[in-house]
Image 1 (cartoon, one colour):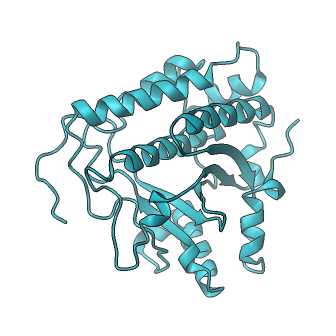
Image 2 (cartoon, rainbow, N blue to C red):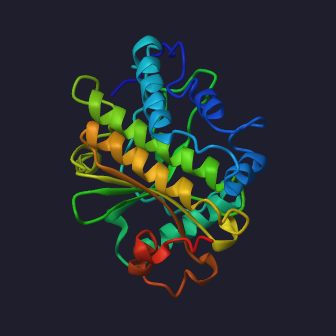
Image 3 (cartoon, rainbow, N blue to C red):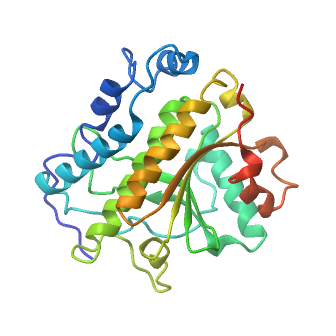
Length: 273
């Protein structure tokens, strides 16, 4: 597959930050701790997250159509577990991600997982920049996929939530256009079919308990964002859920992969106050 040399006129995610900032009480930007604490206190009127998710989707569609986003990389949405150490592993989240990947591979579960998955290579050359790779994805054995944003100490639950929601919207776009304009990576094992044939997608933020400790009033946000992506997924033929989940990275090594999977479900729910 050759990649066109013409860059898109705008990025696939251009304008999304502005839409989020305008929808939330976010004078310092939705990624700031100030915004997360404001939402945690629940003193503001609850934002309409269903309308916001639909607005984000419409902006992505506009960016695709008007921005010439047919330029693409060759490995978007590839399904592969990367385990080798690299220089970037000095970063806390990257190091933890690779450690988890090696742990998964050691238990022979590698084919059910992907990490550092490119999602917008060649599709986000505008102001928004490249969205980077999806931290983890897990084939849940029930015909669906779990998209995982892994956090250690950086960012806030609010910014992490919108990161993983954007990946869910980008997956919806990839599935929509893939037949006409191949965007989901092919390989000899046809692993791209994990994405193409997914019957549902669970969007998860996975982080240690300490990541949530200052924001234990965000149950309303989790519930409303879950309902918002659920409404969106029902319309776009990819049922979705959203959830914050916690795990203990310090005790990962003796833990079975099944425990990690359980943490993505009911077992990892946040004890909100």
